[in-house]
Image (tube, rainbow, N blue to C red; front, side):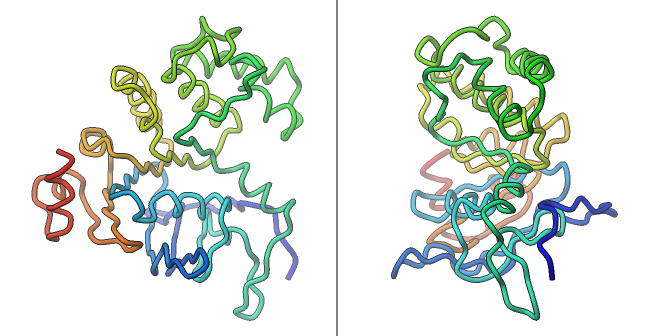
Length: 267
């Protein structure tokens, strides 16, 4: 079997998942971080993951984006096996080139903004399209200006990260991820490093993105966002999925004692 182009975009029928996580385990040495995670995310769905620190939420996102290798199981995006090719039931690592190509289809926004400090907001946004996708600078700039306007920062295009607030930097980071035109957006606690008064602006951008139909997996402690925007809510603890379902129902009436305990502390 030959390595295929990264995320083969097959025609989805009905509720065929865009993301499928099957029996995923992850060890860091002796530490068993993910213990058989199963999850599906439909196209256009906003899947929210909550849980205490150390529950494996961020590790799961990093595995989906091939920033971590998995110890067992399989992850598919658009029916493409992420990070591996399968031959006669055995998994073989994809080349670095093919993993990088898969990753281009998946945008990720981290807790820390990770902007290039020596580049302006505009330069940060056009960096990947021009360097990775080989877009012309003119085309990339046009798109970047549209994205900066979308996140409410059209007047900050020529500002450097040090001249921007944390919330503004995170919105630039979102625009930067969107500039690659990903099929899937992953958010790893995107507001946790922000001052409380800056959280709202970032959440509003994420809400607008959800309304546009972007498929999103969001790790967050923002329960209000989960209730208002999420299509599904997953509660993780100690590397397992404890409870998953409709966000409004779980938040109002959790079925598992551990979920009740967690929500009683964060609501």
